[in-house]
Length: 243
Ligand SMILES: [Zn+2]
Ligand SMILES: [Zn+2]
Image (cartoon, rainbow, N blue to C red; front, side, top):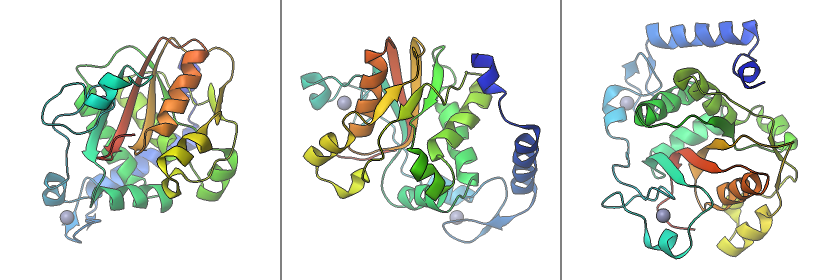
């Protein structure tokens, strides 16, 4: 069942992926941020080096810290996930890169982010199933794709971990979290997910940004209630404020 999900890409999709990767590797394109011609990805080496990488973070919620210790908020109220990893602080210019990926389908960023995440966790990942944080079908129709699924698909290939994009579903189409206060976010996302059957024992939730943490908290809680024992959350970027 799991193996089927890994290989569920059609031959056409795999070919399209290969061609676009080759195209990106061989032909110089302007760097998304500075415009200098670059090959091998959407950003030039200088802009890559300037990205706000997180060197230390809370192991539970991934908030950037001076050292890798559990933050005060997680000590007071531990989140449902057992571990979180995030690559960058969610600030300029990473917010622009993520918007380009999410709203303008710049899929070269999906490959770049997945490469970097795979690198960060490669010696340290458990045997677990990757689950992208799902979008409501109405949102997928308007956006054209689920950015988390694009990341998860690439990570699944890199790390040879199974991907399951079907067991966690969005049962309600919620208002965008970014427009709401902290309290309204919790209310807005409540019961937004449900599980199809019993989920895997060990899960890695994949999302683009961890902002308030409400979405991930709700998704992780839904999985836990349905029987998942161990949950990790891997994201591209983490907002500085706690939820
Ligand atoms: Zn550049
Ligand atoms: Zn924390």
